[in-house]
Image 1: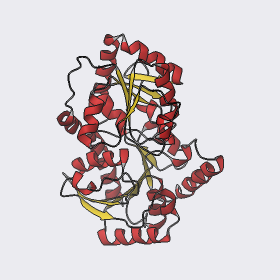
Image 2: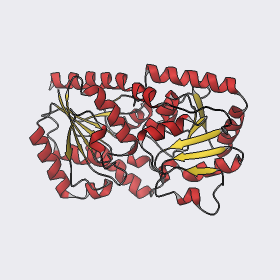
Image 3: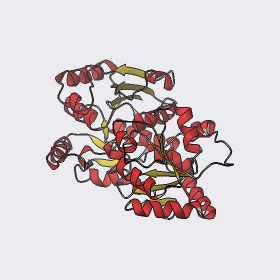
Length: 361
């Protein structure tokens, strides 16, 4: 099949998702990615992929709202579709999903949409803006488009919007992680807690700081950077926090490998790639009780789901002194990734869904 992916937010976890997915899809299909550039999109982004993947820069994709309100973006997406003439179109994230569902002939070609975290779940924006996001999703849910949620929780949310919905859990490239995992000796290394990604309100850096302040003898590392850095480096910030800044892929995996516990304090998620990677790297994972996080972390089976900073701190304190518990949780986490949350399984499920709709179109 000729598959056209359209994505405006080509950075962060979505970028990692595409790197893993296309390595599998390109084995059987002709793959195109029409993408926009965000501030965090690597300058050499196309070189991170298999040479057989075709790239199309969408020049009128200018962040979420800048894309939604730009008529040229709609015209450009329609033109790209006509030039590629794909068998399948897959839209990713809210703004791409909005533009694509308006402009593409959804009854002529199978069109799919993956939100990667619905915008209306953002508790940091006004109730009016959340209602606007939800209303747009409800309106476009009437189009002949199938939503493929990236987690079971996102699927349950999608069912409130459209009856044309299914889900395929996000996955990571295990072979790549095996090659990159070069953790150093644990001798004389302090017990370390880390997280990974962009420092922005969604990731709740305020709670991350609060947890660190409750555990002054534990080292905390944020692998990444972002506009909310001041919430971690202000005058009241816990002194046991280190912010690494943006690192390349190999260095990021190395830093995570050298930690003991991985935490996500997110306010909402789709299904975070960083969490699945941490699980496969045998980090004990603690997460907030939100969609995406609780879909993959089964409390006291492969990690812990925590309700507040105090509970995070209590669990971390227990893990520091209980190596047997750490081993049990890590073993279960790795088994779950090998069974469900990897790019091989993810790609096979997408392929099955695509082929079913292509045959019936």
